[in-house]
Length: 100
Image (cartoon, rainbow, N blue to C red):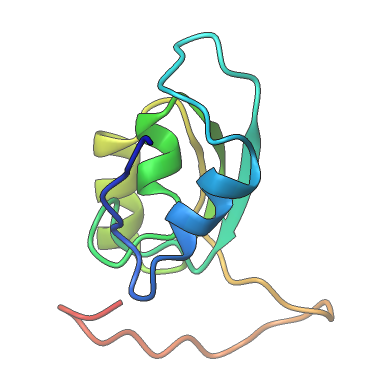
């Protein structure tokens, strides 16, 4: 039986992996994800293990430092450096350096 290392806090990434197969790493993989509040490329990431399997997707994060790390370490992903909201308009974003 195949096993995976989880980067997520509660193993959610491995649960998703099991729900889709589980599948082994495939550079031609066409599976996609959307990760709102992506933060760090690997630390407590819901999608890092899936990325290592060949998945890619949209990472949404408002912190410019973390968005830069995402771009550097996850080049197949698209990074949207913004907040996500259910309504248009301005929001106040409180940034706490060193946190996600």
